[in-house]
Length: 250
Length: 302
Image 1 (cartoon, each protein chain N blue to C red):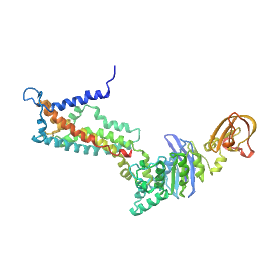
Image 2 (image 1 turned 60 degrees about the horizontal axis):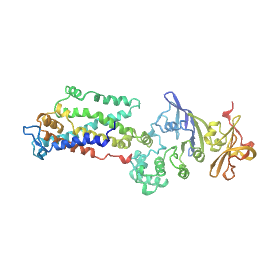
Image 3 (image 1 turned 90 degrees about the vertical axis):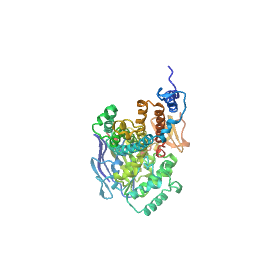
Image 4 (image 1 turned 180 degrees about the horizontal axis):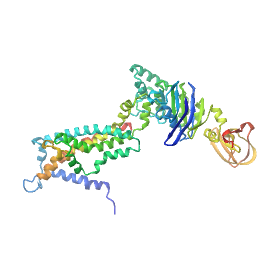
C-alpha cells in the first residue's frame, strides 16, 4: 500500500477540519431547528466579541490567566530545571522521571484528586493549571541547559567568577533560548486551558475553551462555538509566531 | 609546581603520581597521545577537578584546595570556550569585571591587550561566531592574559587552526608568562618548549629539553611521539634523518615525499633525505648508520 503523502495528511486532518470549523462559524444559529441554519452566511457569531455582556470578559480572562499561569510556571520550572541539571549525569533521568510522573496518570484523575487539596476560585484555577504545565516547562528548560557546553562554566570560574556569578553572567543568558521555547509552549497550553477553570473556577473564571465546550455541548450553538474556536486559534498563533530567541548565538 | 598529583575516575587512575616543576617565566609543554591524561591534568591545575593525592603549588602558594576562581590561572581551551553571547571585548573584559576593577581601567587594559594580540579594531565588537578561527584564538589568548595570570594553561591551542595559520600564530603563544601547554603535536612541542614532559597513560615518563627528549628518549613510546623512528634490536633508536643512503643492493619499497625532505623505506630501515636526492621506488641502494647516530634507550633494556 502506498503511504499517504504528508500534504495529504495535512489536508485530511488539519486544513479540512479547520475549514469546516470556519464555515460553521459563518452559519446563522439554528433557532430551534438544528445546531445551525444551513446555506446561510453571517458574521453575527463574531459580534459577541464586542457586543456581548460575557464574551469580552472571557477573552480578557483567557489572556490574563494564561500570562499569569506562564509566569508562575516558569518561575517554578526554572529552579527545578537548574537543580536537575546540577545532578550527576546518571541521576538526571530519575529526577526528570519523577517530575514527569504525574503526567502518566490520567489528567482527570489527577485533577479530581487535586480538588481535595486545592482551594476553589482563582487560586485553585492557577495552581491546577501550573501543576499541569510545570513538567513540560522543566523538560524544555533542562534540554536548553543541556545544550550549554560545560566548558563555558569552567572558563568563567577560571576567570574569577564565583558559582553565582557564573550563573548570572554565563549560564543564565545562555539558557534563555530554552526558557523562551518553554515560555512559548506554556503560553499555548495556558491559552487553551480548559480543565483547571472548569473544575476549580467560578463562572467568572471561564476561559475561551470552557465557553466553547459550553456553547457546543450545553447550548448546542455550534456557530458561536466555532467562532470562539477561531478566535482562540488566532490567539494561539501569537505565541507560536514569536521568533525563537538566541538562535544566532548557537 | 605539581607534587605527586594523582587522580582517578572511580578506580581507573587517569593521572598517576605526576611531579613537575615549571620555572617562573618559562614555557613547558606536556606531550602525549590522546587519552594520556593531558586534559585531566589541566583540569586538576585549573581547579575544576580535585586530586585524590598530591599537591599543587603556584607562585609559592599551596592551592590544592582553592576553588578555580581564586587561583589566578589563565586558560586557553582547545575549543577556546569564548562566551557566545558576548562580543570580543566583553569576553576579554570578563575576568577584569570579576576582579571589580574600575570601568576605565578595564577598558584601557582590554584595548591594550587586544592591540597586543593584534586583533583588528573593526572586529572587536563582534560575537565569537562571527570571528575567524585565528581571531577567536587571539581573543581567547587575550582573555587569558589580561588577568595577568600567575600561570597560563594552553590546551591544544593550535589544534583547530590550519597549517599555515599555525606556523604564524605559534610564536605568539610565547608571551613571557609562565606557561604550561598540552599537545599531541611534536612540532608544536619541540618548537615552543623550554622544557618538554612526556605524559603516557597518566604517568610523566620523561622531562627534558626538546633536544634531549628528541635525541635521547627513554623508551620507544617517547621516541615515537616525537617523530619517525627506526628501532633496532637491543632497544637501539636511530632517527631516519641520521641514516645515510649509499650504494647497495636493497630495494627501495616506498618513498614518502614531504616537500623539502622525503622519507625512503629501504628494507626495514626508514631514511630521511633531501627530497631532490631521493631514489625512486624499485631502485637498489644500501643504508649506513653512523656510530654516533645510535641511541640505546634505557627503558627498552630487558
